[in-house]
Amino acid sequence: MFIDETPVLVDLSLKDNLLHDKSFEKLEEYTALVYQTLKKFFTQENFYTGDDIQNINQHKLEAQLDVEHTYSFEEALDYLNHLYIKNTIAFHNPTYVAHLNCPVVVPAILAETIATTINTAVETWDQSTSATFIEQSVIRWICNEFSLPQEADGVFTSGGTQSNFMALLMARDHYAFANYGVNIKQHGWFEEVSKFRIFCSEKAHFSIKKNAALLGMGYDAVIPIKTDSKMRLDANELVLAIERVKQEGNIPIAVVATLGTTDYGSFDPLDTITTIAKEYGMWLHADGAYGGCFVLTDSHKKYFEHIDKVDSITIDFHKTMFQPVCCSAFLLKNKQHFQYVSYYADYLNPFEDKDPERPNLIEKSIQTTRRFDALKVWFTLKTLGKNTIASYLEEVHYLAKAVYEHLASDTAFEVVHEPELSTVVFRYKSVGVKENKLHDRINLHIKNALFKSGKASVASTKLNGITYLKFTLLNPNTTKEHLFEIINMIKQQGEQYNTYN
Ligand SMILES: *Cc1c(COP(=O)(O)O)cnc(C)c1O
Image (cartoon, rainbow, N blue to C red; front, side, top):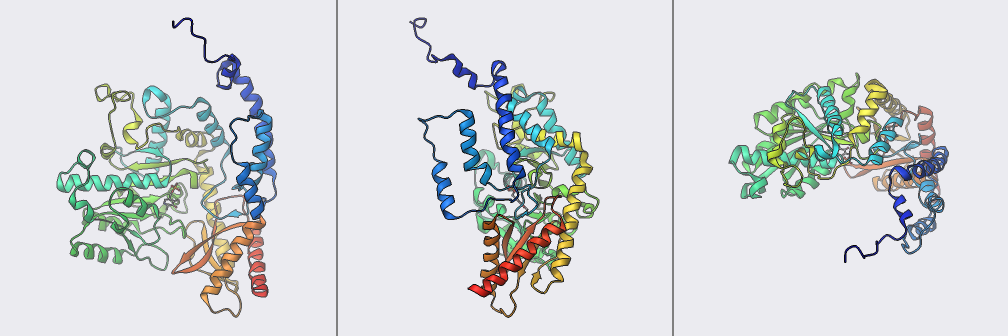
């Protein structure tokens, strides 16, 4: 019966769509076409082609799939170019100064290509072999940069949000185990958890609240602490808040110190926070998603003096190490704490088969199948060294300082802080306008008008309910001249708004 059955795949050439020895030439041929198309994208003048609602609606239609109809590779690539590549946002363009998206270094893209082409997954040693050691060695390197002890360890994650999730999970489960002998991983939630409180600055990343909710503690478990004039967590306010929470009968379990807040790039004072966390027996997490890579620079070493005392660290290589997304890591001072996420699956990593010579990285991760993102960092360091990265970071930092000086000396602008990293938050102020609501509308108009023109992208944020504009500088190819030009565009838009509205 079995022998007589006709094979399902009648056309054997279809198998050449899968990558194998016989189809490799096709991959090379197509790759050349892809790079021809991409090259044009990289020579486009503006960061964006600019858009109106007709174009957006058109793209929405064109993105729809009709799976009955297939195209040749060339046709599909051409279609994709018109729909997406030509019209997408160019982070490498010096006038893109909106969010924490960096231009990427060449070796990282090629390392990404290698990892993707081989398609290594790094959950178990029998799937990744030496890739395991490459990830471990990148983790060791960054732990050393932070002067963490030998017992420290870490794992690559999908981003700062996931790293912060792991930190809060460890904080919760460790507090429950150490203080109540409760094993949350095994038995789940218990009564006291609803009293657990986590402290962070009011400028901390929203993922702290979001993760507290995902972990069953809720947004209300996160206590925002006021910041000082430099947008850093105020340590006196922290102590007051901890005492208040205790008096209410709630339980302080963790503090998050942000090393580089998303909007202001401010560093919370690690020295005092470390002392406070220790005194109250709380977990201390450092969210260095934005600022963490500045540990490589001379200019910012001083902010990391007490980093070896924190329990866990978030670091995003896709923000400040010029790596393609995703590329991020979570570090633990004491690797024992990975037990709060480890699981031994019979089919994957049976406990009886544990072998220190052949580690299974899944035991440290909340993911199962996981990308080999560490290769990008490893290859970048092999080819460029850390000093190249450090010099890029210092470049954008000094650029931010220069633009701050420029804006501060111009009466058309109000600047809110002197940059510690590479963002500048400011607003345009029209002559004769007193009302903040009107200023808010003018500044939002400026942001949107610049974006639509395709000539520059700046971000906006709010401080004390007032709308501000923000430059996020992560591109060493952006010059003062580029920024002065953007500043002129901002003024022009601001003046025009006054005239016509
Ligand atoms: C961006 C950011 C995050 C989130 O990181 P993702 O990689 O976007 O998930 C967390 N914390 C801070 C301070 C950030 O700037």
